[in-house]
Length: 423
Image 1 (tube, rainbow, N blue to C red):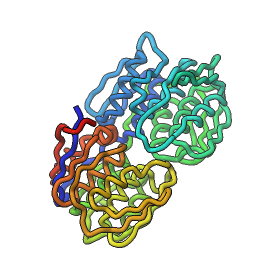
Image 2: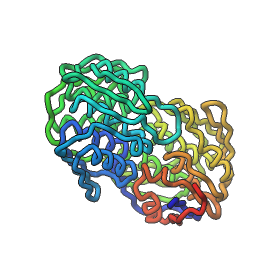
Image 3: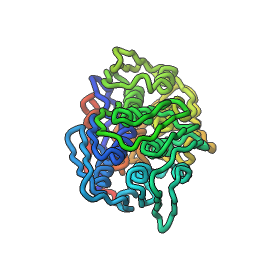
């Protein structure tokens, strides 16, 4: 049954909210459990993508136990090294099982991945890296089939651009490879740092995570992974945007301040007040109308593409003109037409959107097109007059844990209902 959010805007947010564990850190660490055969992961968010990952690992023959905020994985008696289409089609991160399966079992058959329709996001860089490590890779009937005789071998890998998923796949494959692997032009995202730390806690020999050169000395085996996932920096940024739009004053707990500096700087430039209360807490408040502010999305440590839609929604009510430039994905402006339905003044010019701030937004029926677009429409609805209905919120459920519950605890008028529309 499809669902929607019904939002009555105009209420300021007040109170305290806790950020959940990171989706984008949890997923690769879950698949890293393939390498060790045993994993205990804590601070795991309750999300559709986590459910899908657990189903996939269970289908492969691993014993998977879910507890509140925890996942336990153990190797079963018979492992199937295949990731079928019916599971992979809904979640692009499924491709991250390819490297671990090859490294541990010497073979893998993984369906070409699906996920949000925000751009091509080809997996050729993943495959090229694994091929260089000695894997024989074929693509046939929508599946990637990979095999290696003996162990993968350590090599020098230089990515054409800093791909997050490609870096994660190569990193995990290198852990059990024979010899030393050097990954150059590696992605520097905090979620990769979290993955490296989780692997190192189990005996992997990794250096350089968080820089553009990661070195891995392969080992024959690693032990149990017992690790707690970092807070979700995109959820934290989304709550900054929610206060920036709806107004009010909110304390945010488990706020990953050190890895959100690019986002914090832009919100502060726009006039949002962000006070660091401790290493894990901030106080956010809005005082008057925000100012138009420009952003350019970039790989970490630049402004994240996953915050572009939310920041654009914020600028819709800011004074003056903002220019939003997207450099990561070629199809990530699908939320523009939906924000326009709420009264936003937006003009697309190639990979740039010009935002002219308006005095008010007015509620309407809008449709989510991807995960972060969903969040932008929800927070815009918090500030819009009258009622906003957001359809196809299954996108949002892939990446935000109980978002409407958290917003309601801060005073928002938002509820989940069955959707009468046939999509």
